Length: 352
Image 1: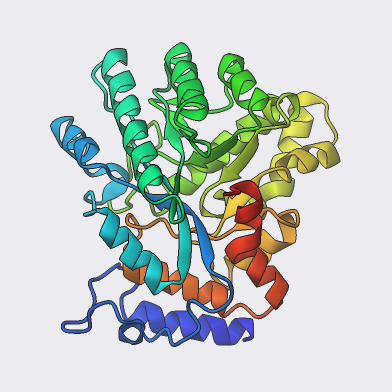
Image 2 (image 1 turned 45 degrees about the vertical axis):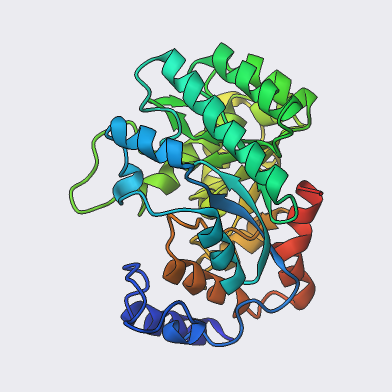
């Protein structure tokens, strides 16, 4: 399908209010036909979703008690295991790597509260994976910005709970991932060849009226963290850490050469060296498989570094199906590349 045809296709979906994340038409349930997406979704090998969220019941209550149940600009969605499995079935996902989304432990009243919350959600994730190891993996939450506490929980989760990696927010209360002084944590992760999923949070500043944070601020937040991870030498000093940037890397693929010039000017590296470090990142397709985004992402990312992501349930089912349809309809990628994005690349990063 050509770009012009894809754009027309997306325009029709948008007309049906999918980008508004409206509920299914009355009586339509969640059938694919209700969204006009056709039979393309679910084709190819079973997908591995590296960007799917869990909302443990205790964590949902904790967020409500801390007046933080609308992080990102929309209410906390309903979640339970069976709903997750049903959502996976609709788009042909065989396995999902679960994580707790923003705000993580940021609303905690103190370090002890943050530590207890991280421990609780990680124990929940470990039990869920133990019950259904063929369907789920999980990424551990840590109580940043407290570095010693975060390091302790990271090592516990990886060594004792056998977490598949960590989710680290791009910023925690205004402290950005990649800022100087975080070597204690990165050294432990590097020693374990850990996977780190970088997920955005609300920017450390006021929001703009009429613009929910997830719409654009989240993309900038991820880009800021990626910039600092490269600029401050983290990706170079700790090369065994596999960093995944959510939502196709925010603005990174599109602005990579501009970023490289800035970092090179600041650090004395060559732009080519900086681009090589930026190219070490992995990327997911959550909310990003569009005819405008995919060409830039595919042109920039290294082979094997793009993986399927949905962002469910914060991206509701209509949005998940909308972008999954966009990925399936993208014919400038051949079948082996589709298979790699949907399954093979994630299987290599998350074996088991």
